[in-house]
Image (tube, rainbow, N blue to C red):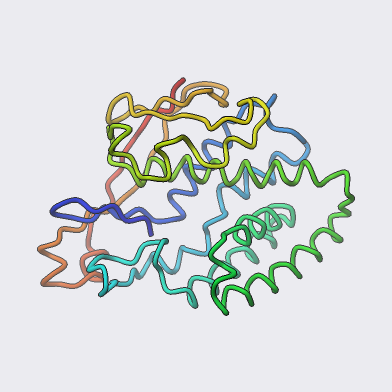
Length: 256
């Protein structure tokens, strides 16, 4: 769950819905910047589905007593989170082994994994999966740069979609989430940016400018969300409020 707090409510966005937006972005990624076109379908699938392990977790959100807010993806208890990461990667691998490999590499790249015993066990299991998939896919050393690029593309589009979720629509640069005030993380990997961070800016509450622009055209994405009122949470509890809350939709244009 992605959670953004306001004075009177919590805006809650399911991880899989955010991932779907990143997949729409992948659909619009310019061919000239893509790399190995033969892998494009699997890469786009990985971007769309990389957070599918969160689907059951987000269906029944948990309350964080310490922060007095719904648990977000940033502070969710590690044991169930890691279990569902692994489950989601397996489901994706069963659909397309290359997409599963990208998702596994994405999750094992999280720096906090090595700090927890459960995280270190997860890393060991995923490293075994990665070795198996490399062998299954017939990987050679010459394929590594393309694989690295596709992993970075997934990470970048994940963070660009999160930009829409973590920031209040229309936020000034000074008001943005700290991850984004210098630019979009991971975008300095790309050659076409001159290895500089891609910059984003809210032009209005429904338009975000991206410079330099890596997409084939301006396009609109839709983010479903639920708004949970704090007064209702205090009396009825998180699960009841979340289950009865209506799904609302927020649209934003991505432009150059």
